[in-house]
Image (tube, rainbow, N blue to C red; front, side, top):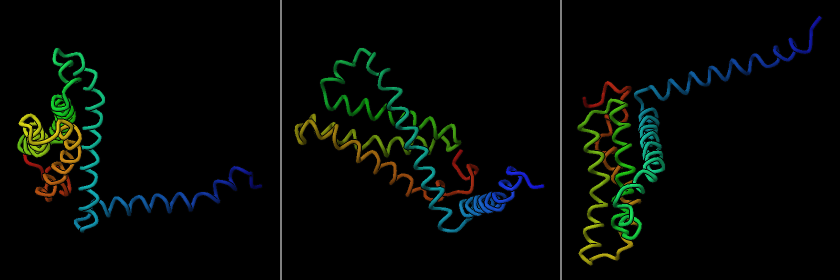
Length: 167
């Protein structure tokens, strides 16, 4: 006699088998040396670093507000841009080191992301740009700097494993 449970399990079994086979196919594509696999690994690295930056910004924001310079950060768009840059770049560099990217890549990425903010702050303080330019422009330029550094090191961010990273 067939019970309701066994009939249900029998009708569902092929679907689970197909899903598992589909997951193996997705993993095979991601691990492949083809262009699609490289792009997926690159995007995965970008998302990992973006998450580290956002978590850092959320976690370090309250910590930075406790420092003696918190008043300057609250009243100066330039100081605010520098504090936000630090709160995003430092955790991202830490994540890169945890993921075995190496100090060279972490410093390179930190530089690529921080220099645009420093240029905007300098231009703002020199009176060449409005004071809001540092706070508004740093976000877009920081992300562009990260993407540029990753594209410059395409092979390192699309490697088949972290053994491809600089030590």
